[in-house]
Image (cartoon, rainbow, N blue to C red; front, side, top):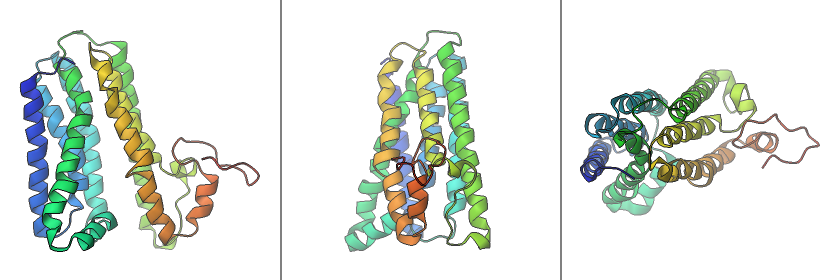
Length: 268
């Protein structure tokens, strides 16, 4: 894989330190949701450590760091803005009730350190191309991967902005967002997020050993499609908005597709 052991250890310790700091902050605020904003910042931290210490071709090191920063800072600020003044995420609130007085330690291991471990594993797709000295030139993989990542960032940002604008209108209270990108996919933000990571994988393919990091975009995709992404999000929405059932019936869950007609089969 070509990743220096010292860099692997440094980045691992850095993300655990970041998440531990977030945990301490969550104890003061009595709200674990801060981990959502720290998640993307952890990748930014890893990317810049890779830029500083990886030793690979400097142009690729910098390109990966800048791309990751563009994605991570935007997403972190958006999540912080979205969550400001809100109660704790229902998932974490449920764990808090179940754990009682043990929740402080439960949250450290089950939320912050678990996410730190996932973060570091996924971030290997950033570090491997940053550590590769060859090829010391821009390749088709670099260009295609960067283009896909940028498109995914833009797609995700537009989806987030459309949803935020919809929710900001009091007339839309209790309604289901089915306009713009949300007309063609129930989770266009997740679709854009996946494109970002497959784009980073495209850059990794440009260097020797980079193909190995395919587990990174696969893991992101599985988490969003089958684990804490779509399943948990939709379960929560269905409990609050019965009209979401009709939207779900006629709209693709992930890939952007034309809305189905009443006589069509469900999209998924």
